[in-house]
Length: 125
Image 1: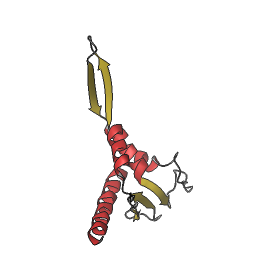
Image 2: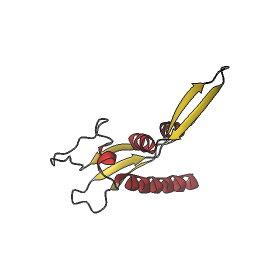
Image 3: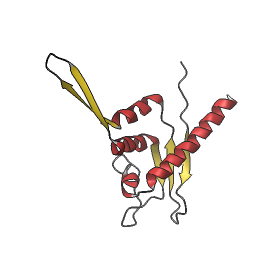
């Protein structure tokens, strides 16, 4: 069995005087499943007679958070509210998403670019 090579890339935050950069990777199939699971709140209820009924509703916030948490693997030149450099770690990983309304759009654009890189690599293989 040959495992899939991880594809990752650094992306510059647009027009940033601090020159922030974020390193994202393409999610593997197992990680995509984790995102899909997080993006949907599922409840299971048992009716009279033992019938199992599944009900669910989308949870966009959880899905986005899981997607970014799995894909974002590093950053440079990211600072907190006080101007101190923000260490990249699990505790801080979602701060850009939660504190910057434009971050998810930036993330989505980066994912599209990564998919183009992946397709080009597959084509050349």
